Length: 448
Image (cartoon, rainbow, N blue to C red; front, side):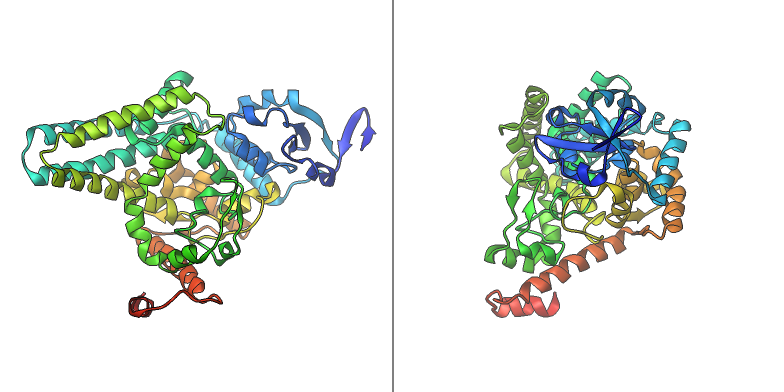
């Protein structure tokens, strides 16, 4: 460690040694910050900081923080980097962030939020009236489908409010998170933030991104057959005989599982809130889930018989399953990697690990902003009403630096995802000790 003009400098190599809990440093634009004692107070959770520990985090910091966040850095300042440098890609990305900021796009939210909230309210009214006043089985089934749409649209609003303030008042924005996430969808916004922040920082890292860690049910890459460690779940993802059997059929079970995927989100929400982990506003989170588990079962109980109740619930889950499919389409067929994300190639990893969905503008409500997932990953604070506008700018930037910008139709995205799952499934079957085969296996293997 040297000293020049009363400034203390360290090298990037020295910074990299401060990469663990209790000794966690990061750098932002050549300045080094010690966040060891603050990591658990970080509003975005500890996982993003742990993922980029001992590294330059400039691009990630710019992506996830408004300009007001810079004022909080000084109290953590330690020294400067003596060998700080940036790539051409990073320089262009930072210029684009600056340009969008000057245009005020991060602050202009449009009226989409109000329209979505109105749609949700109308659908809920139709559901209640249909269940209580109609005796038609078909009306009840349609109401079950509408419930799935309510959950989906509430999920998009929860996603928006978690990334940026859809309402300028901080407290009201917090209430909107609880309403759209916990109360209407049954999904804890605290769980979502923890999971989603880890996903964004470490996009498609098989060890750090929970959105590609679905063992024992799914494996998006044969690299997962090596029983990698999940740093999100803090456990080994064992690839045993049961997992291999399930993965061997994963391309066939994918869509049925997606129809029930909401159950996993319900379970993950409860598990986090009853765990010993630090959860901000735990009481509010639990109360929100209590609200959901009061009104939804109550609506279901008003149906005349158990057959209709079961069908109503199944349709609710199946329709919202389309949203879960969308989550997978954006990343499953894209490039994955093993290990810790690298802050210096953050932009590159976001584009390589993400896929857009090509659609007409009138379908934007359906995809909830995830049709521009590349843009969203690069500018997560940008309201979704602006994603279509900046898409040509992002595409041009990717082309300039020879980076992938993949955008395909919804159908083709499904084909690519199915192909990714099928490839891994066949690789799982070809391992040294094959899964016991029978006639059913042979039939599936022939036509699958």
